[in-house]
Image 1 (tube, rainbow, N blue to C red):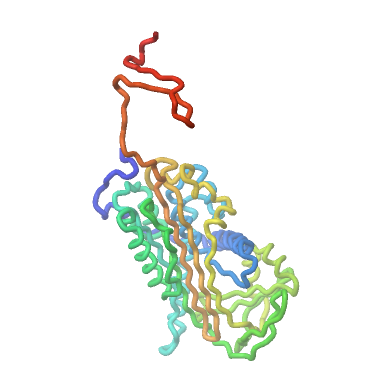
Image 2 (image 1 turned 90 degrees about the horizontal axis):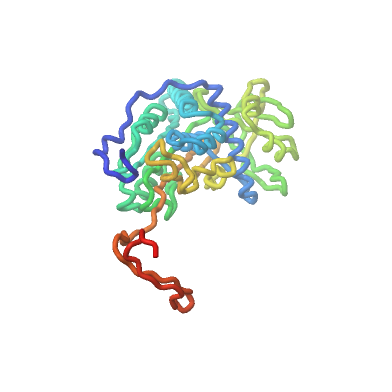
Length: 408
């Protein structure tokens, strides 16, 4: 039976088997990502209440946590299931596959709607896993990555050169986010104990279906004061909805396969709306019940979230605890592996032309450090012993043993 750290076959053993699963239920995916994302955003804002703006990617966060969950067992798995609002490997894979299918449809619709001179719509999501060469990864885990998330694991040299691997992974993320996220993993976040890194990168660049007109700066009430914000006005009405204490507007991107929905609370109602945000509100806000003439500010957000701290608030504590985390579905025994790093960054830029946005999430999983041993001593021959107080080291008891089984 393999033990953690035992040699294994060549890197191609990291390739899972099985075709990518069929798309899951769209409504279930919307509900899971909406509820998980609303809870995560609330906690992100609470951790940094002085920040004017915040943004996350529920899809990116969900994908990485789900990839880790594919190798989790017992309470570690149950905690992730509860936070993600989807129970089990198949249910979580179904959420991601449903969204991936929706992205494909959105790109197809944009391609059919755009003319020769139209700016192309780009929405690309990529998952990747890097595994320490020699880690005896369970075939079932590699199969889950292949079937649920469509990826193979890449052999990596974390033990030999963790900094080189950190730079290589950051470069991979930068290339898949149009360099909006040049450094996902900060200095020191990957070290020689790292044995597995899971990453999702998401990038979107989409023109509006109808471009906005540049407007004059106008007053924007922040809640504590007033600023003059650059504004833009839509050339024609968009779909909207009116809810309990809020009004929404949904702005389609080219082709209509993707859209941005704004949820605008009534004056003084922002905190209450944030508190009540859930999948039901998100679904109602996107409903087409009202025609809205829209004027909105241009904005740009760059957020680095304390993903680990928020995940722990959501109840995912075991996965970060050495000796407690049960990731034995990946390799080794319960307690051998744990998540040492969990990072998330999001960038969103919105102007008259459209939207450019990127997000990346990464988790580094490490092997529990073992005490350093310089010498193994087996006392299998006569020996002396003494008992002393440590201030002087003077022996209080002193003896010799040549037969520990004898009694005198």
